[in-house]
Length: 437
Image (cartoon, rainbow, N blue to C red):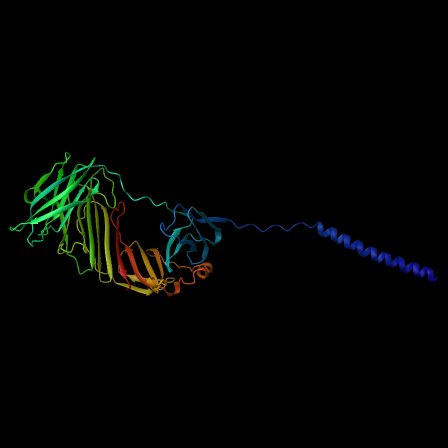
């Protein structure tokens, strides 16, 4: 009986162990046959900005360059350092993007231990925009063939103050402004004889000479000298009055610049070409009368470049007008501007001015460049009228990499406003800048 009980117990134990093992196997098989969980649907993304670089932003010095992107609410979307030749694309889930973004460029360079941070932000950039940087075109420097030189003698120029020189002389041809050497002889009768030595170039046989004389009269002489002969002209009988002339009286100012050039019908506009009719840089031409300052146009041209800018107490005014001759030029009074919040992140203001967009500037500087410990940080913000952006912070990586950037210590300096223009052509613009109102 004892043997049978032991046998029964052993059989029972084997059965239990078998049941346990079988249960483990069934569980293992069941786990291995479970269906995989479905993947969560991927968020649809969109390329919201692309940057193509062909030349470095700074052609003369090595620099660090970054692009930083924020949405319209100031939320950081992305950022990256870039170098010459980089082509960058930034994407994000569609549901986090706003219709416009803010694009910020940061340039950092060092010179003799001095540090320079240049930051610029443009808001209201359309989502999906592509920015191309470079290559910078070489300056215009055509290879003209010199064919000789000739002398032009001009008699009877009014010289009431015995300056032995007219107030201003301009010489140009179809190739643009020409350099020349000159000498003048003041005569007892209060006139001046002026001798010009003029270079000639192949394909450019006509010459325009304009003179602002000692009586504040603006006159011109147009000639063709294809044979490059020495010539003589009389200021009284050969020089003509400008067909259209306007005058402006300048308010108190520290400096001003004026440039008038004419272009023939087959000539393209340019910043420095054309037939120069009048050019004044006040710090160099201190004898020029400014009440009124003469501006003249000639009927032989049907389009002009009129450039004028003036620096006054607390504000600047300037116009670059490419097109027809101006009928008038009025220097506006300083607009009334009230800055409500001077900080970059929440900048706001009121102004009694009709404008298109504005460029606001902040900066901070410390140290001495001579001692090699100078630090300069400048930030400009370009904003369309009636647009109130929320400017985002720089990424932590950039702030940690450049501990001397000092953006929190910058102070507001100025606002430049682009004013409306009628049918602007080429590089036309109209601007007023207000300093630290």
